[in-house]
Length: 303
Image 1 (tube, rainbow, N blue to C red):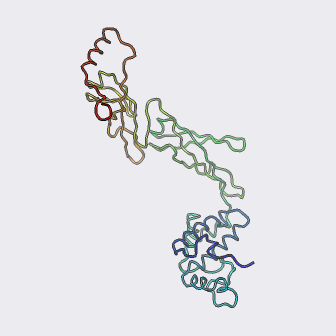
Image 2: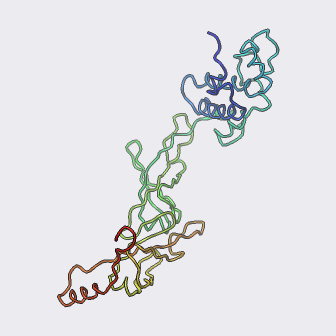
Image 3: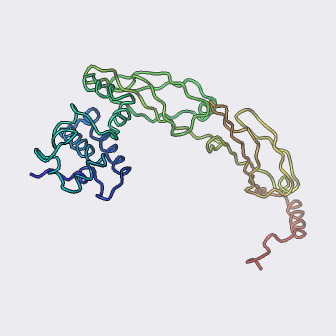
């Protein structure tokens, strides 16, 4: 069978520029590298990808390939600086602009030599992912939290430090608490996805907290001072006269504080609560007062 087109191997058009080719090679090399891909054809695909990039990643070699195709690198068709077409790329060099080394670095978090050594070293066990619900107050203050993990019929207990101000959905890693290695390597890690339980009164948005603050009609109309619970204790909030239902009153710096020392704000969302029952005398007074109040349903669209 004739060799596959190099552009097709990298999944790019013939008009692709150098950056597109480089990105395509990087993505495919990470996907099919034999040290991270256990499929039977991974090594073959990786070699094919490298061969395509050896040519298309070099301007001169690419121009020659565009003119005459694979025959430019077949036996007797001229010198190929990286070996004959189809030859192994592990033992030879790479073009001067190749990012092969950086691809290995991205895969293993180290240099190219580390990527080569990883082939002969035992692989670590697979990670274990677990959603872990923590109390609302613990997410604010931080502290120790006990996690139980069941594997192979046995349960193990770990103490995990919860950072102050941790966000819902944050991921915490417990080294060596994952699945055991099948090849004698170290165990994998436990990845905890933090889920924060709801509070009876408070709601959280990032580092900001809010509470629905019920007030009477008189308090909203005349103004008042009300007490609110916050993570740091009870505080007094001044409600200005004429405050409408739904207004958000801010207490600056009274929200969540994280490990970096950043602080959010605390918001009181005003909710005017009318009385459920009134005496005849109070009802008469309210009706009389209501008759003297301006109609709030005026303006465009109401008339």
